[in-house]
Image (cartoon, rainbow, N blue to C red; front, top):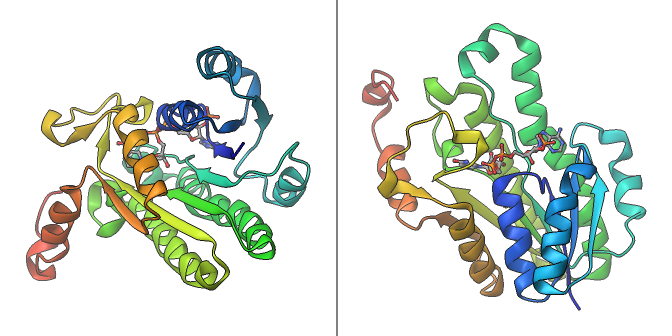
Length: 243
Ligand SMILES: NC(=O)c1ccc[n+]([C@@H]2O[C@H](COP(=O)([O-])OP(=O)(O)OC[C@H]3O[C@@H](n4cnc5c(N)ncnc54)[C@H](OP(=O)(O)O)[C@@H]3O)[C@@H](O)[C@H]2O)c1
């Protein structure tokens, strides 16, 4: 039986991914800062899919215990999915360095810290899959997502480098670039229905892409072309736009 590790399983996308992999008979390791919050999801998955599920404590910002967290896992995962992320109010974060720093650390530093540990293990095993949930926001910096987008851009670049580092040792690294998704993170935003996915759709697309050993996926597919257009707007014009 294969095992999947979900880092950030209290997130709507993380919970949907956990269910999708469980439906394909993966045992599941769920993690969150407050693992007791995972108990309803844990029993739901166990009852619905009949697989083994564990809930564990994990904080992306506790870098110094990331190695001991991974070493002490009850079983080692075949697939590790980094879902956690943080989007604060950007204007507040522009004023308050502690908010900006937390966004950078959660979306980038924390992810790099734990994925380095996992990648080292997979490289020794010469197998394993790492999936990182980044964002289309990281494809081009803009005023309304100043800190979040730059941290996600750094994460996307890290995943690209990690894929390059791990390829020769049969370790798969997949970057997921979601556009808009209906979750707690976006509940206060008015999202355009035609461009927005549900967490279950994101999970289905990730699972199919994982099976096909894809490198980079956009969710949904048309975001690749939306971002291509946005990336190609000349800077002299882009800097005047309100985005
Ligand atoms: N929703 C969108 O439109 C969208 C678009 C593109 C990309 N994404 C990305 O998709 C991923 C999932 O987001 P979501 O929309 O499902 O948002 P969400 O429901 O707000 O989930 C955010 C998750 O991050 C976790 N988290 C925050 N700080 C953490 C820390 N220090 N240590 C461990 N976990 C921490 C939260 O855990 P707690 O329960 O402990 O707070 C929660 O599980 C994120 O990486 C996000 O950037 C989302």
